[in-house]
Image 1 (cartoon, rainbow, N blue to C red):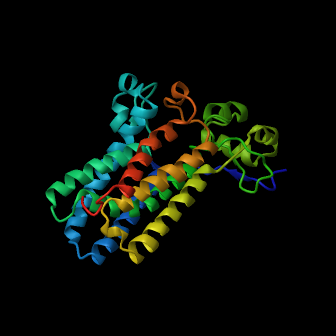
Image 2 (cartoon, one colour):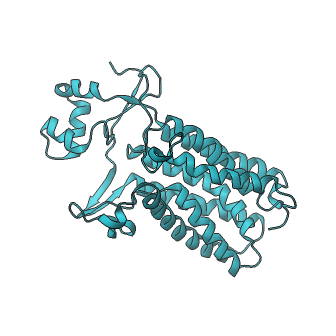
Image 3 (spheres, helix red, strand yellow):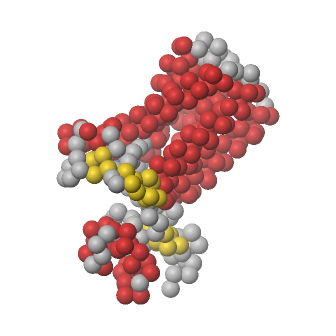
Length: 313
């Protein structure tokens, strides 16, 4: 009955120690920073830059990206938290309706980008041998792989899923843990299991709940589409543009290319396959929140790539 499609039901938590939960999503963020550090280390070695400064840059990047991502999510998608649960904005917890350790969830890539730009500007002011555009050009290269890791983390979490699609499509996926199709409380009610994890496993594996499984629609695994797109952008920028051309000498060009390809091609296009993530799209209409937020970044990218005298920072 489910031959062509994929049934996706991993437990988002790898292991738990008391209230502390280690989740795939958190691990993929850590992997994103580790990979980013190694890519930047290679770039610093090629250009004979101090690795001591790279360590300092890494701290700037981690703090700014995490803060920007979290604040961006709250501002763009969940502004009610400012009034309803302010502690959850910067802490890995929720306090309403009950206290719960959530991990660092609810992170927006647009906010992460804005946070990183600010941090690199501050870093460049203290390190005069690296202009802000020099830094942005090179950090953008590493960002592609980092963004791919995050989207894979979203896939493991069964979040930011795609729109409903025909099951005959080879990649069509049943996200059993989709928060709209089968929220945890509903799964527990239907199966009479005491935990969400046990309930979801019962729906997947027990013949008694085949009829329930059949009601869950197939969706696009859009997280994997995006991740693949970001990897392609990385390969083009690092192996093609950075290593084999002199485009890295045109300050701002690589960063502009990244803005256009990541936000104008990969993100903007695949948003059409993604179910609504909320935000202000119902008010503005036409595009999703993610698409509206991407448009200014694409415009900035076009300016950086085609501005006159772009050898100067």
